[in-house]
Amino acid sequence: MIITLINFTKTSNLSNWYVIDDGVMGGMSQGNFKLNEEGNAVFSGTVKLENNGGFSSIRYEIGNTAISGKTTVLIRLKGDGKKYQFRVKQNENDKHSFITQFETSGDWEIIEIPLNTLYPSYRGRKLAVGNFSANYLEELGFLIGNKKKEAFQLELESVKLK
Image (cartoon, rainbow, N blue to C red; front, side):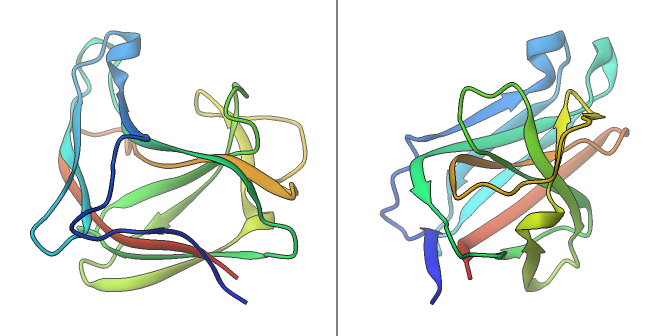
């Protein structure tokens, strides 16, 4: 059975989503998150490298969501041909996230990510603890940080678990 975590529509509430850019470290990247006319969410902006910059991200506080028995994340999206990270936190107050990178094709596609391949990372460094194995999660998100100055756009339709 598939669980729908997020299914964007024209009336979706984005108040539990927030943008975190490298400005927290002095950088100058800028990300935006909004709904488009089709009812999909669009994460877009510019990554800049000045002042130790280099990333933009969005996070969604999903609340304590049981995912027991689910093994795979299914993300329906349309990227821009760039590489992104998918990120989850078991507890929203954890410093580290469990992450993986995925490539986008520029077309609508479904990205499948096995949960047990998400590895722990903090500020770009892999941690020496096990991969994601929790029965619940409280936060998910996306990040772009390809170590280059670039404009980006990631259109999101849904995030599901199977």
